[in-house]
Amino acid sequence: MSSLFPALADDPSDRVALRFGPRSVTYARLAAAAGALGARLRDRGAGRVAVWATPSLETAVAVVGALHAGAAAVPLNPKSGEKELAHILSDSAPALVLAAPGDELPEALGGLERIDVDADGHGSGAPGPDPVDDEAPALVVYTSGTTGPPKGAVIPRRAVATTLDALADAWRWTGDDVLVHGLPLFHVHGLVLGILGPLRRGGSVRHLGRFSTEGVARELNSGATMLFGVPTMYHRIAEALPDEPELVKALAGARLLVSGSAALPVHDHERIAAATGRRVIERYGMTETLMNTAARADGEARPGTVGVPLPGVELRLVEEDGSLVTALDGESVGEIQVRGPNLFTEYLNRPDATAAAFTADGWFRTGDVAVRDPDGQVRIVGRKATDLIKSGGYKIGAGEIENALLEHPGVREAAVTGEPDDDLGERIVAWVVPVDPQAPPGTAELADHVARRLAPHKRPRVVRHLDALPRNDMGKIMKRALPS
Image 1 (spheres, helix red, strand yellow):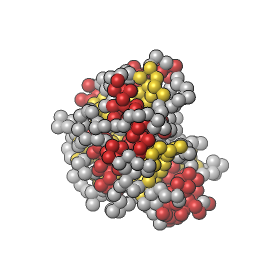
Image 2 (cartoon, one colour; image 1 turned 90 degrees about the vertical axis):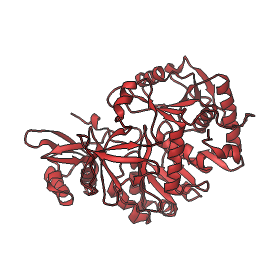
Image 3 (cartoon, one colour; image 1 turned 90 degrees about the horizontal axis):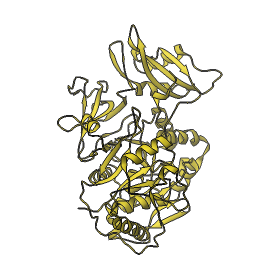
Image 4 (cartoon, helix red, strand yellow; image 1 turned 120 degrees about the horizontal axis):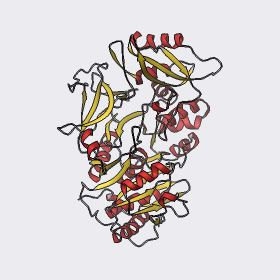
């Protein structure tokens, strides 16, 4: 049994561990706060605890306290609708709910005992050795539920530790690093990587509360070394760079700029690199797997790729018939399957879904499709269910067409799907948010634009204009929500 956060026990000091806006807590005070909360949870014998996961100091303390108590934290999205929240609570059956004092909780949580989290370290406790096995659940994180009610992925402590240590290796992540981000804390990206990651290293987090380019510039120009974000955030950064010299200076001086949760368009990569001289690196993960691949800090940051498999992670591409895709040609498409200590244990209360997610020999079926470049770097081309288009005998990934469309000066946002076609099997449809709604680029213009950059069979046959693309909280385009 190893501690997830050795710095809390080994080096409690006045170094700042967490900062949310004007509020901060040192390692010494975090140790006291987490220890006191953990003691209360152990006294209640809590196996699972819900956490009202606002972007606050209390959420971070709640999760760390739960982990020190040996309980599994179930982070709740404060924006969840009544039906979704009721399902999660019924499915996970938490013993109680942890929240910040003064938070108004919805009626669905009214039947649970509530503990208000003291994030200021006024308690007398201090965390001792973690009292549970490495295979014990650390988190139950609910997936988006695009094909039914959300499923609770049970993430063991082993997966948290191995993922964070593998990222430390890839990114040369140390206790000297100060991370800035504005990500939500009910998701793997913001919570596991963005809060638990720095605490495992003994470093520091500065959470913006709400993302802004001004906040990014302020923190990176005052000692922060790393920035985590999603493509929507980096797009806003790319748009702001010409008019914000302090932002240019901030990104140019950062040690590491990381994007995740969805593919960062190549166009935004290039705009940021041209303005700052720094390239954003990407990584690839899922709720069920935590992180699978990452571009290395000492390697090439190549736009459109998510790097190579992390230490301990096995990755393969598989055809629909189960045969392996062995070509490293940047064109041969297959579903990503992974195996390693980063994987979740099960979907809570769903043995059928758990069994269906794995092959007989233990490979997890991600549902994502990708190609591999000659040097082994992985390029995600989309989701198998929504982004793999079979047109004219070709298997085409939507992602590369979206990147090509975004290079057109008249395109602000783009999504690509397939729809039935009597001749081609499926025809490629481009959903475009134009820069100028009064003069949107037409089908022929965009088809020629894509055909020149990729190949003629990858050009869109239909272009539909929208005012905005539907996106979720992490900035991912929800293609199932596009107009039918």
